[in-house]
Image (tube, rainbow, N blue to C red; front, side, top):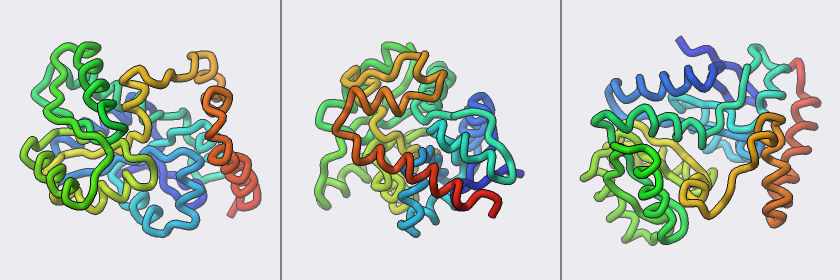
Length: 242
């Protein structure tokens, strides 16, 4: 049985990174397709006004906190989360663990050329990693049908979708039954990091829970999105205990 806690109505699996990796791998052995979501405070706030997104998060097979703000907010919930389980690190751990197995990956999203570069670098980083397909995140309705057909033909164990939230979560939900992937994960801008186009915050920032601050000072165009963080904190404080 899942051990869930809730932050502003969004369910989160209360588990460590190690447990999340084990759970994701166990989903590969189960029937049907499965969705893994990695909400941060921005996505939690988006779900407050987007019922379709909230329903997807509530129905996902694994939901982990990709943001120290979510971990902080959980102290006002029924069960406290013990650590941040970043989506980027979750996918890295899965690639490391599955590189020597028969399991396969498909990279879908990002600007033209980014997913292919990311795939090439990840296969070099994790010898034996099997990436069976890539496609960028720019498509019209006709091209989307071809993408779905290609993913279905490749039948990946894990489909990584980097279309940005909430577009990627909605795309996965709408198409999971058509693509024949065992597990689909929304990975946001992770392909840019994998490809080397964007650098992650230094470890000291990550350990202190300040990766968001590093992102703001290195990508100042994100300031409008970052304004959701104080709003998230105030909303949590207003609703604590309820």
